[in-house]
Image (cartoon, rainbow, N blue to C red):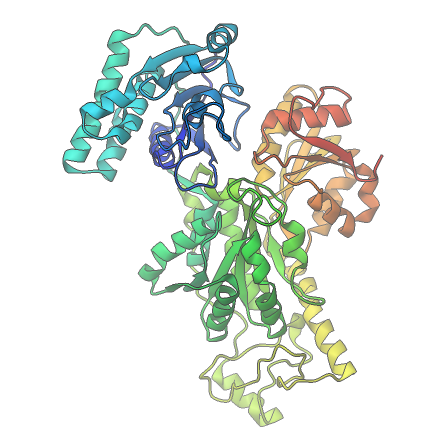
Length: 629
């Protein structure tokens, strides 16, 4: 077993503190100088049901989950619905151990709580342990926790046992506990942490070679998710109003904004549904605030009507769409990238919007800021599109990412002096003037003298009166459509959202969007180490589409594999719609089983399609040609 990376998985039941325990352990590893990436897997239940969090830690940069894992801490499910094997959902109590064995690497380490779990209930457990050279430590973590009065402290005992087996220093773990607890609770947890640690050291002979890697970081790191990036980007860009209705996984952004807005003098409103949420945010923007709202797929569907209203009234708004597996409720806590076409084409008629799909927390921060800038400069809806993988997964990034200056500017708003001059020339303010530069006609805010206008959901003339005149319709429609051309020029000059990784002169390409960025880049590194010639591009500018950058990329390679987490190749079809002449170069690698890609799946997909090598039948993925061959 190599010690270049630790991939630690803690498994239990929803409501057993698996997520909070993993967060603290991941932060302790970060404070030890390691780079960390987490993957969270959980059921759509409040309590009970198998859940796990995977922490990948290395002294090298980590961009995605790994291939399998090498350390399992199985705590059992204290909220299991039925412990009987013949029950509809099976023996839920044993699942934190039984359902995690298939992905455990050869030579891996298992700690399981024999106070809740009986390994003899798993078919051929001992044979599998011997066959895979697993190193098993059965501890009565539950019993130890009960000695100190609180059963939930078995999680702390499990972390102490983990630290002993990995030869980890307890100081960073103790510091985090001290930050989160106090008094008797802190003392009890510190005691059980050390008891479990000492018990392993004193009473067990270690048979495994796995140890935690050692590392240092050149600059201060923070441990954040894509939701943090979006929320902090919105706050730094001057957003002071958010309205929403809870829906997984969008709720993470909404919660973070709600927790922080009051410190900036902002307002958060939870409303009765997503129609109201989007409409309220549009109203706040109309009144002069930087505003946002958002939801996940089903809730965003309800926002279709107000989205069209924002466009035709040219009211800037930023919306967040957190994709999850559909259709309908689908698998609400599992990652998927199936809402791309929904986000691009929802609303009425020939509508326009900006759509960014950031690939990591740093991009979430920067591209959310850019979304606000464009929305308020060009008076157009801007959407930040991401998914459960990016929403709930955390990773270490440099703290300096968040050092950019705040920007409270409201964009293309006229001054009262301009309004006064406009009144002298035209008699009144023309809000929707035909010849606005770049398609933009500067707006006024309520309360500005001489700035009153009509904001109608109907087609309208320059001052806002409803008009069905054909010439007016064509002029106003063409003006609104021209905004995307202006935005494309803005992005080309002031942003670089298409991350390219690998050798510039590579023969083959891998294209991705959104949260598949990191796994694609790691796959590229592995493929080049194996002697292939590959590079990747992760596209974030979805609308307006990054035509020039993607064209240059596709012209430089013989073929390209497009990886995405959906069943219908929505991103590949979007590329074909924008750049149809490259159809024969494109092949899809699709995954839609509720789990994000692992690097090995992308490597195998590349080899079977472009090099005639490995078979992908061992992976839950599908390959298809853009031309149906």
